[in-house]
Structures are given as C-alpha cells and as structure tokens.
Length: 215
Ligand SMILES: O=C(O)CCC(=O)C(=O)O
Ligand SMILES: [Mn+2]
Image 1 (cartoon, rainbow, N blue to C red):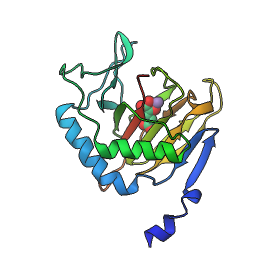
Image 2: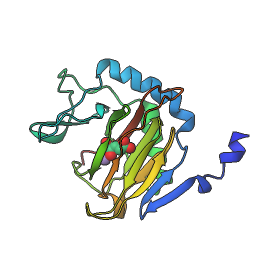
Image 3: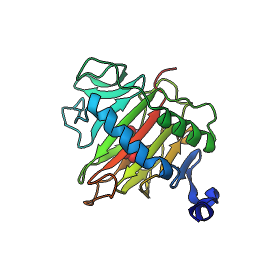
C-alpha cells in the first residue's frame, strides 16, 4: 500500500535549484535504524556544543563519524580525523549511512560521490543554524547529502551570494536534500526549531550531513 503510494518517486522529488534536489521521504525506511546508530555513535563521541572562531557556542550540538569530522573552535573551522574531546579517531561510518548517502547522491545525479565525513547535528527546540556555505572541503565537485530525522525543521536555501533570496522548505523525518554542481556553494540554513516531540526521536531533530572532505 505504502509502496504504491510512494513508488512514484518522481512526484516526491523537487528540484530546488540547478543540481539541488529534495528527495522527500527517501530515508523513511532507514530512519529508525539511523536513530539507533546515531545513539551508538554518541556513546563514544558525545554530542557537544562547539565554539565558533568568534567565540560563540553553537546552539546545535554536534558529533561526527567516518574518517574525517568537522570541528570548530577558537582557531577556526576544519576537518580532523580525531575527536578533539577524546583524541581518538571518530567512530566508523556505519555501512547503512554510507549506502544511503551514495544512493541518494546517485539518484540526484552524482554517481561518483563517496563521502569520507558525516557530521551529525542535533537540534533541540530553539536551536538553529544561520545562513552559511559549506566550503571547508577540498573539492567542490562533490555534492552534499543531508538527511533529516525527527522533528520537522525549516530549511532555507538561497543562492551563491548571502544576499540572494532564500526559499523555505519544511524538512521532515526521512527527507534527504542533495546539492552540488552549480548549487554546491549555495547559502543555506535552518530556522529555530519549533517545540515538539517526535514519536521516535523525542524532542529533537537530527541531521546527517555527508561530505567528501579530502581529495
Ligand atoms: O541541519 C541541516 O539540515 C543543515 C546542516 C548544515 O547545513 C551543516 O551542518 O552544514
Ligand atoms: Mn551547511
């Protein structure tokens, strides 16, 4: 029944800009497993509120898995292979994460994407991420794959300049956004998460951002 309703993936997909696709419910079947894996990862690499170079503590709590993890502190933004809190390598990227990211990228027109970094964002009500570009990676020919689980959030997607108009999209449990090519460096952000409770994720939204950090 559900298969019939959602098998027309075309209708669930929306092109947000050239090279940018919203794949609605793409990860719905994986979502409970993703939550379990996120929980396991956070046991060895706990969520933490990192500090920006300007000295502000981020409202989004973060951790990472995979060969490289994105970090920020007073010294700047960067990728590193170890967790600065423990000095240990980040937890391995679960196979289910990797295949989800590879398949979503392929379906959005990026057949060569192999992520080496997975940033895990945890938003609690009130948390937000201001408009920014993802530009700490070495090779912008690789797309970004972004998976949403838990409470819905409003994603803002703009253009190549900070002042470009933004469109808003509600990202729900299981939604995947892929952007690359001409939109790889487009500004984007998440507005303050609304209060709520999700039946599987509780009072939170999780986002997995898959990137290729190294060449
Ligand atoms: O939470 C999201 O959907 C976006 C996260 C993001 O843009 C980032 O971590 O760079
Ligand atoms: Mn981003």
